[in-house]
Image 1 (cartoon, one colour):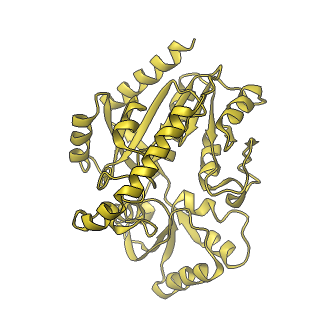
Image 2 (cartoon, rainbow, N blue to C red):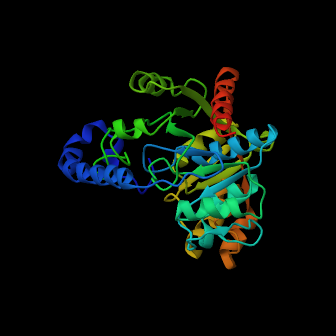
Length: 344
């Protein structure tokens, strides 16, 4: 479980705490629904493919958005990403420059997305879509990152990503549970669900549950290393990560036969301080081990100095990607094709 998540979100035995907070969750859910229904969505001249999730925290939205960009580009399209730049200081509209921008300005996710496609940062999604239409980057389709509950922009296809190991937790709305709005309302906004499994078959019960509660397509994906991992075999490592589900990353390292001497989890999107960098460097020295982290964590160290810069230089990255079995990949491709053809 993430360090910044209340334990009762995913603990069936903690129903009492969740029940006490349920009235607040009901009010939060009502506010989320009211905000959406009062919205006047802007219809872009470009097709909009939305990637979102039902719950707070990480489920694999960024790898899916990158996967969609790569798929669309291979099919001859010019995708552009629209992101709110979570945890970044800029509000936009602003074109992300992955070479010069820092995570403090645009957020770590924006830096990763900008590697896959031109990326527009905008808290106001309507303003962001208009900026994409204006250019200067060529664009034939917008990939809207984390926008399922956002009423500002009309979508042509909305895909929700579900964590294959945790699902929707206790099924309650924040703060009583992890849901960002009542599930039945969110399902109305969704065209397809992708269950992101830690390993093939590991999320089958979540997939089956979703298929019983959602009438649309429910596809399965798995997060895998994006490059050769032979360098990890039998290597002593100190793993560190501040992502939505750090344990999944640590388990992946072990699956790659790394000798994980210690694993250190931080809060999701946490900006490390000098003392934390010193701690990690000392652990690596004590174990005579290699520091290994995620692309997202390393992105947050961009432009840093002092011990943080040394941590960045000393850490190796294990890149990941989303993979779908042939039948589900073909189904996803068909969904994209249909959404794009409706607008042409």
